Image 1 (tube, helix red, strand yellow):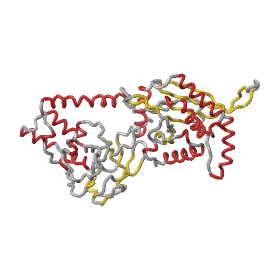
Image 2 (cartoon, one colour):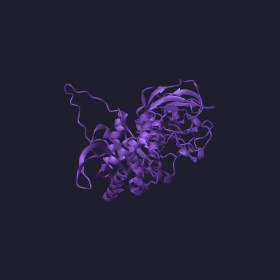
Image 3 (cartoon, helix red, strand yellow):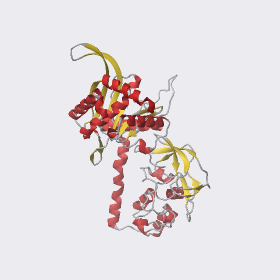
Image 4 (cartoon, helix red, strand yellow):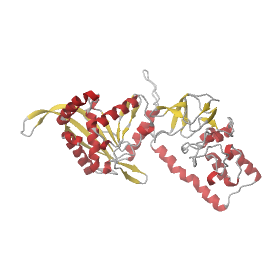
Length: 447
């Protein structure tokens, strides 16, 4: 199961497009999978025979775990039963899958184990030994068993596929009293499990500590949240808990933008391009970031990563949640290009047709609820980004002009939510003032 997004932990195997025994070529679509974001076809990473299907339709499979075994020339099909199957499934179609996700010991023993990253361009069926490239091939549970019994895996001959060390090899070494680890090695190995604990603790932090039990009252219905809803809930909880938000709201007079939009749409009608208000807002937000790099950054484990290119993510509402497709290099694109790209991305997002690189990697997000008549709202930052701009509806109300006369005006509120670890209030205020200036003088967006 490939990792199709930063927050993805598992995917659902919806449908097999091939059957056991079919010949497979690299790049062939073999199955349909559903993630928390999209439904897409999974392509084979190697050529061979689809010798064994290990995940059934409708099954949820953790990222990195086996769903099938593609048999290459000279390879043996792993057994289906017991730990032998779990050990051998990891070798399906080569060593090209992502690194394993954290799993419990029971899951590792019961389920297939993730493959290791590929280190070379040769096929997996080349008779590589357990010590290929100086590394021992063994699953986490086998490594743990060896560590608990003070055994050096590099001294054990593997009997699994391609020389992989499996549980029976370790137990045989224990019975023979062989492959004992030196004292220094044992001390270093004993420290290894501690490195995994912070990761496991971090995974748990964002789960609600105490949830009420269902009341079961008459007229109630218990509905399980979708995978997308679960992921969104976890990420938004994480964002609110870890990123100290601050907010800055400006009210923009949109008369000039609306007039320019009408004029441009009349000229672009033959090209079937129709600019929206949101196109102008995204262009203004992207252009204004050139002078405010802190708000176009990511908060990483090694520091604040500032970006020169503005990759504008836009929130698109779906029936089961939302998704944020990305317009790359938005600051250097014209209004018509932003309009065409945003409409295409939004359409394919609602149809579930986006590729992972089309909804990952944004550096700032724009969320527009103006079409719902919302006059003002604040949005939650999409981590690890530093900022998100909430766009409200345009309302008609009286304002004073330069002569002190009351005149009708089209007003719209924009609210910035920003991460106070990266930027301060002055940064946010000045940035929103620049966005306001661009929208009230929209000809500057055409330069």
